[in-house]
Length: 413
Image 1: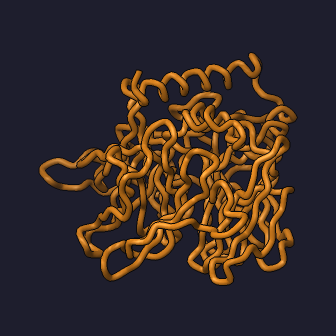
Image 2: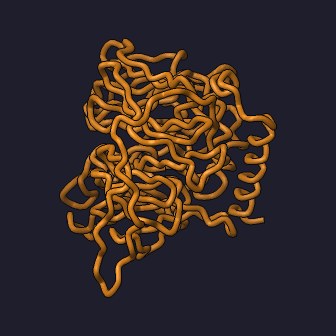
């Protein structure tokens, strides 16, 4: 049996297990009690690692999708949608049709099923409902799974919605804070970086080789530097080794490859890193959750650590970090809280009245976007560092089911 066949069967088995949790829809209490999926561990090629490293807490939702909650009476989105128009037509004779404004604008690109929504709300119709991705130089990098083979690909989609290239990958993709560089692992074990080719140096380069791509696969989770990984700009890619035991490493375009955290507490995984030199590190796992630390590369020391929270995404300046409960085991997180990295004090919290937070990403230094799934579909919310929150998009269930959000924040996968 090939590795891909094994991963495919594991995916199907975990999907069946997730669906057997309850014949009826999840109640709010059930969802809150089991919440725990995070973006940085929701990767494409980790089915083997889920079972091979049980000591590392990874949610069932890694391969089976995310959960739902009760209905609510939340008012409509803060940014109202324009009236639906006819879907845009595909390019003919080399002419790119103008996108049609049919969706809610949130300030960055996102997906709603097979609709690619630009920052201004204009849309492009796609042939595929991608599971993750990023936008580079106007092109969409859509991540998809081939159900027949279990193999994973990045489709490079033009502004007109047409696929021009497909790249096979054995990992998820990581994106830097400026959304100008992505990283992924190819089947030959090369750690590839990719950026807008108009920025120079041909738009892609391998910065490490010979990495693990089998059942225990290397997974890039964060990039610092840019806007390219070419000769003019050094970038560093932080990656987890995939076995849940070996410490995470960082490879650079300058040719180095070394542990992220040297010394006695190197950790078992990283979640994110900022250009300011801070890294969120999972130090250890235990029965009731995990212990995490905020590591400062400049001082080569942990600023603080905790066994009460899981550390998620750092904002671009490194002044705030998104966190949630320490135990991750279920379809999503019950809440996301923002902590001041200097004081470890909580400054804001988003606890949806229904459903769970499936994933999150920073829009800017003061604004976190959260993807929420409830019994009526998925939606994208804004959480401000001042504690304010609002729903930015209408709920959507196009092309999804009761375990899968149809919205996708384009910040990797």
